[in-house]
Length: 530
Image (tube, rainbow, N blue to C red; front, side, top):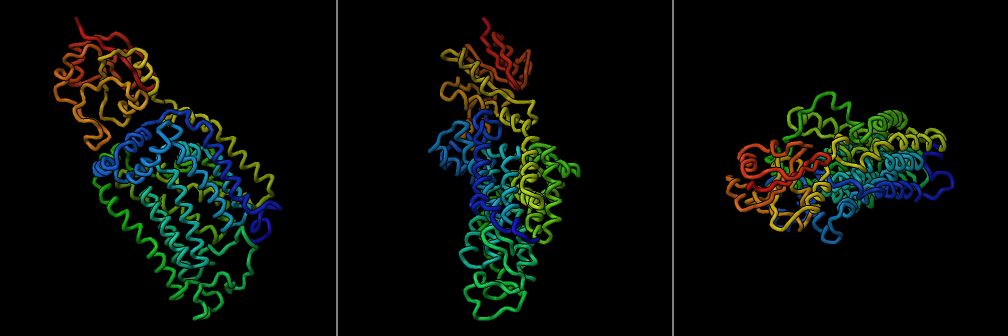
């Protein structure tokens, strides 16, 4: 594939516009309404973990959340500077997605030309999934950024081998593994490309250009002077031979293995720790089934119709790119297939774990659109944005799924704040659930939260995300005159929703004075009988 439209800057526009336009557009979109949706359950876990002392964070990683521990540590430092408002908690993700858009465009320019890169970056900016995970205090946006950064660094290291480029690649891969263990499945795609480049050269691996920064080089089979390694003078490669520095082509493979070694050393303790936590951390995940693969495009794009459009364009782009589709195509297929295969025997299949593959789908889609004139190509990108508008609006209302089932933690907290009195207590049911009713109310009430009367060891003391309650609730409730009961769901009789000894103790000693249902949660004021 050649031609000015694919290999150089788009028309008379400067080369920096290729990455700057997607970066700024993504930032503008993700910042729009970034604080509008309430923190949802996963973000409440991030808030709870990130606001603990570093020692407590280390203990938490040893109990339940080792895989996300490095992200919590990053957020610990960030929240100390920026605070814990929804906007502050989500801003690192918005910045990461904006940078990922720019790097997606840069990678697209390297592999398929400036126009393909620009269209890929713009398409990525308009996806509902980009906004969804760019507005979430979770590690997926950072993982997406690091996945693209590592892949871009790999392309640079294969095209112009040198210790600085391989060091940059090693750092990106290590950071990727620490932020998101499953994102290291991307190394399967990288390894495949390195093997091909080792055996047959970068051209066979599809990473030899065109480059959006300079004109396409003649296809003589001879490497041009800027691409030669520093010690090329020791031996002259035959036409078409792969470039690899010392050791010839085998040097590429050894350099790659050496570059991924730090990541292996750093993440191995996390993997071993997380393996023992899987039964608690992923007890809500079902084993993967074949229909789950079909739902993947809509899941990562956060829109079925936009995901379908992206998948179709990516397939067309793969056909148009030929061998240059190998790296982005493998970066989509191999992580998905590896996670699916593992998910058929272990509860690991969660579509958002594969969000880091989306930029590579956008790259292939951009290559497909680069085959037509710029105006109709931009029209298709705009159409994708318009089709995603309902989902864009919905995700700014709630991050819960389905979107029709939000949990109004803030509304529950307002009911309590408006009616509380000194000496009030609070009780939650269910306590040990992924809804995190206690964390949600605590986040919005802060120091104004009534005493959690049944708690004997809180989350920090347990090094967990859940607190422990007393075994004899009737004794713990003795002397309490008013209790705020917070239960999941909309309940006409909230006391009836509380089971076990806790429910019996509440029903025996208290009567309901006030019931205030909110979306996904009900707040009741209980007063002691007599």
